[in-house]
Image (cartoon, rainbow, N blue to C red; front, side, top):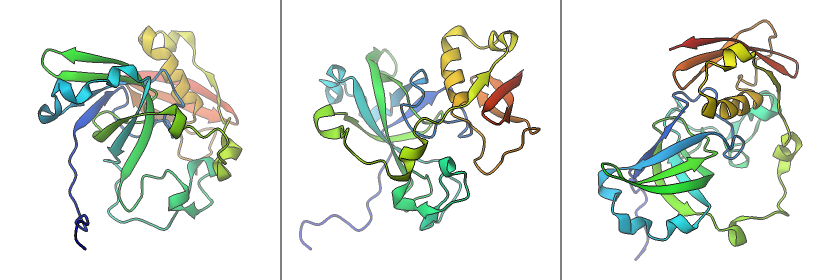
Length: 233
């Protein structure tokens, strides 16, 4: 058809995010759940024209369109097991935010804390509340518009039932003191979201994930998560 898009069109990253989580294990399952988790979006050289960012500083939040670069699968499945349903109940992939999709694209709404002109990197976006691991490719950035993007009356389907889920976190002060002071709230928020695989529930098992330059190890018994060790990477 005249004027139609090609059946397949290659897209390329315009930027990547620099964040405190080097692996996907431990990431919050949605953007905005851990507001203290901060990062910065660094653009590829060809997209560093300051004119492309003119006016963006007036927005408090932005959309990031990005790629699930570590989903580990080439194929997609019609149904997936959402973690918040215990990892043992299947839902349609289009009813979830699963990374295992026909096209491995993610969409996150993050707070734009500031736009900074770096001498070497050009315009850099400092963001908060992102659910992206370090190095994730960014394909587009768009402003969040509350008058069109916000729908307070929207139904949340099965996800609504687990909206307030959180663990109690016991992080001994001697261990917490090893984490930089400005990074502690974000780490506590990540732990409260329960980083474990949804299908594992073993009170004796030790889990761990990388945060900054540390391996944070913990156990979970019922609704309580206890940090038992913080190891240098």
